[in-house]
Length: 186
Picture 1 (tube, one colour):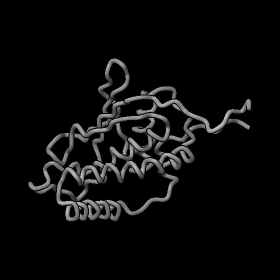
Picture 2 (cartoon, helix red, strand yellow):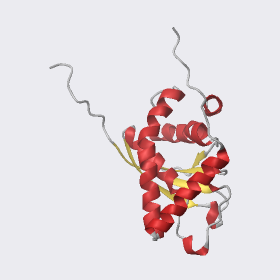
Picture 3 (cartoon, one colour):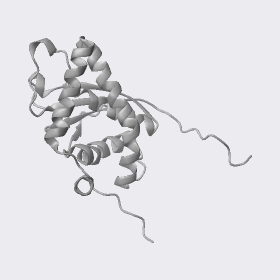
């Protein structure tokens, strides 16, 4: 039997169950609003959104690997491309691009020109420090940690703050060697 070829982001997006985009956007907005009410400090809301995203990413990577049929990526550069072209398309219906690589190949930017999380959103003056989509940075960080990559993910540009695109910087801190719970030769 021939090996199963990896699916493109478009093919996966067409085949997965989806919720109504407006319902998803409004529900996420309600979560952010409730966090702002409960926590009162914008920095605390940013941390909580990142942690929520991390918890989602830890679990989401299993679904991604099961449905996408992608092979193990050989390096961080290939991993970033798979996240941008397949992951974002599969889960949000948008395609991102990867740019601004550093010389070592450990830091890059993921650019989103469209972001369904921000439909219907305007930040009031009291929330100018809020990274409204900080959940996405946590998702990426959590998913990459599950495939043995310790990363730092930060927002560089945000359209809600007047920038022309959404830009996430992903920095590989270290490649964690996989540890197996037992040895086969014993």
